[in-house]
Amino acid sequence: MIRFGKGNLRIPRFEKPVYIVAGGMTDFRKRYPEKATEELVADAFNMTIRHNDLKVDMEEFKTMVNYCVYSQFADHFGDQLLAASRVHDALGFDPLGNIEVKTGGATGGHAIMAAAHAIASGYATVVPVVGWERMDEVPTKAGNSYIASAACKNFESELGWMYTSYYALMAQRYMHENKVSRETLAKIAVKNHGYACSSPFSQSPMKLTINEVLENGMVSDPLAFLECCQMSVGAAAIILTDEETAYKLTDHPIRLTAICSGTHTLRTADRRPMEILRLPHEDENLYKNYKSEWPGFTSFLAARMAAYLAYNMAGIKNPLEDLDVLETHDAFTISDIQTYEDIGLRPYGHGREFIESGDAYLGGKLPTNLSGGLIGSMHSVGATGIFQINEIFWQLQGTWAKFHTDPKMWERFGKKIPTDIEDLQVKNPKRGAAVSHAGTGSHVTVAIMEKA
Image (cartoon, rainbow, N blue to C red; front, side, top):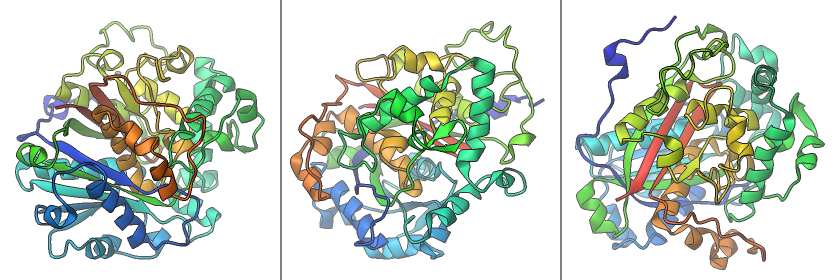
């Protein structure tokens, strides 16, 4: 059994406050043959500087940058080692220092964490974080194999070199242990594809019924195609700064109060049972009669660890009460419902209540994945964690409509704004969170943001 020492649970702190001042991205597609990776990255970065009402132009902004962080999941897709160097050169930041981060599906979250550490330590004052994935230069089957190799190649890969198969086993076990129906999981797919209809960035906007999800083709029992994330091409960028610079650049910066990480063994079979790590709002008797081994095959210790540290760092007492908007890493409907429990929206075994109660919808207690998430909008892996935090940033700034309901934004991507587009701006949100998740739960970050 894993037992924590005092130092293991030390709550992190930033020596200097960290702020987000701007975000931008391309739209996300299955294929993007008309643009090279450098062009996509430049498009996302240009939106970041030119469409966020910054007080400086591009030329002046570039004189302020002193470090860069890049986010790409796999060199295999673009067949280019040191791809960050190509992007760094294309954006005109040579000879400034930079690093490239790779932690599977959580690459975007960890890239932002690396930039936050640079700001918080005083090493840098202005750090662009740019992420992308080029997933259309290899066949889909090969792409699935590349992605699947982010799990243990000596163990999970025997299940067919496909992540859906890994999570399908978790889904079967979770549904058996907690008496959860496929209809409950399908509600998540309906919600996220539906919210994607109001985003010009989304790859798979669809208005669906539960039956349409259940009758959709099966990828790996019990997960249908409509319950799985997208394989995407696209890019996203975000700008982190210190406090002084934040107000030089914008009157409405958003503070990144915490971003913390957790890990767990790459091979799921190596995950030993342990006492449940309780979050700030969970009573010591909550799991007194909990009968399943934890984390077992249905929970993610990495997510629980990241949430524990982030909540304590940001002063979150109860996420359902203290947060106003949330983005989860909904790679599959099952991983979404697992995350509800890991980050404490419901106790273990009761995750279905979060979606079934209406709390996860606009107008509910904690609207979740109003962006459409990974199921409805995108999973261009290196860009994903940045995409999530951009969406929360715009919600907290109150600028969601500027980036989602302006017809010119839709035209930018060759799209026409829907006549029935929904206004998904949360009313007066003060705090938001984003969860970036990798592998079969091997790496996770939880970020907390709030109005400055």
